[in-house]
Amino acid sequence: MKQSLSCALVQMDIAWHDFQANCDKVQQITNPISADIFVLPEMFHVGFTMEPQKVSEEEQKKVQEFCSQLAKEKNALIIAGTVVGNASYGYYNRLFAFFPDGTINTYDKRHLFSFAGEHEHYNAGKERLVIEYLGWRINPLICYDLRFPVFARNSAVKPFDLQLFIANWPQARVSAWDALLTARAIENQCYLIGVNRVGEDGKGITYNGHSAAIDPYGNYVAGPIENETVLTVELNKKLLDDFRVKFPVLGDADGFTLTE
Image (cartoon, rainbow, N blue to C red; front, side, top):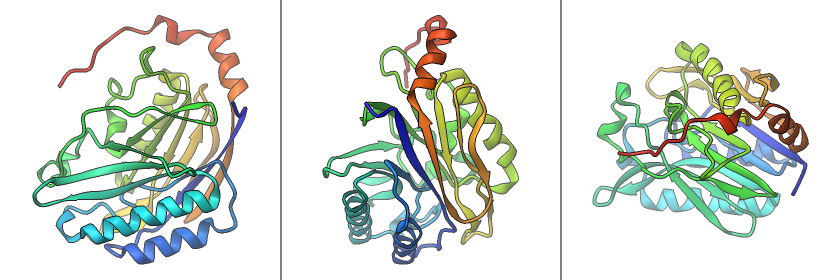
């Protein structure tokens, strides 16, 4: 158990459909940083694209190899969102957890953003993912999942200490991003990290980041920020455990079972 978990929030301007430029940027801006966990935005290698067929399987392989190698170099857990699949198998907006020992866990985005037609190009995931790293239980989710508190709810079946959201969340709705991140931290009595992108994508949509870390009280530990940078933060497990003992909200939570 590591009582102090260091996290690096990689807020970047994503080059549209240029995986090599994006991988090079991640390598460059994380080079001087040491942390236990590095968190990259949703679809960090291409941007929030509705043209997954343009992301070749060779590119998918290279991006995953890059992230796996980065995890080994940094001796850290790398959380990153990528496009995977093909025309026969179908495409997924997938989150990867790359461990430094070479282990890989995945989560496929359950809530597809129909407003942008994401459901027409990608298959939805079904299962939540809770991973354990350095004694911390972590629940990683993707962007639009943030608007659905039932799926994001902490539970006795698969409890978590830290919830992560990786995103391409536009500036036009960033006030909702800020509010919902805080709400998820409070209701789940956990630490919350949200990592968004900045800049303008290939469809002319503007993003202003607001990546942040929030404690279980709903207070900002770091951020929100609007520039391209790597924001580092330390999360304190004792603070979380003490708060849960002092104010045992989760013990009064409603039981539920997720269905299709």
